Length: 157
Image 1 (cartoon, helix red, strand yellow):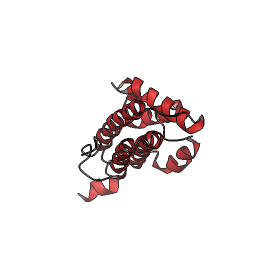
Image 2 (cartoon, rainbow, N blue to C red; image 1 turned 180 degrees about the horizontal axis):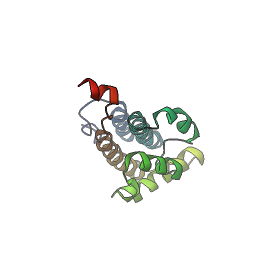
Image 3 (cartoon, rainbow, N blue to C red; image 1 turned 30 degrees about the vertical axis):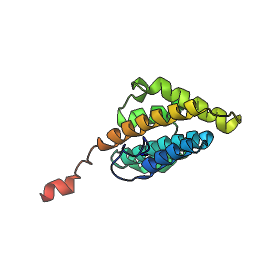
Image 4 (cartoon, rainbow, N blue to C red; image 1 turned 90 degrees about the vertical axis):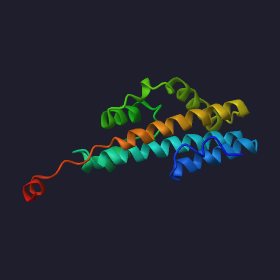
């Protein structure tokens, strides 16, 4: 059986592999592991998008200082989301999956920090929504603007 995450990105990148693993964990009844793994895929995708945009913004030299101030790469965190939106102009909180993503983060936090047992239906929801989030972030990553040519490069042409 092909996992629902297997087709999301043709290239076998790490977030896609994590989502595939999350699907496998659901099949094995390891729902908590699936939830944590799915959310990890989202956070790694956010980190990659932020780094890509930092490299093409005039604030590139501030990347590590700003990232040090972030508590995580969880888009449900206001500070992370505000930085993400400022860099990308993507109003992710208005995306069709946003309310479900907030539920995903709540399930993940309760499983990790409060020891909540995750039901199969919850793990399926988390995986489905995280696939949407990672796909969305993949599209945003494709929109990274090309760096402007430096004056010396323009003059040489």
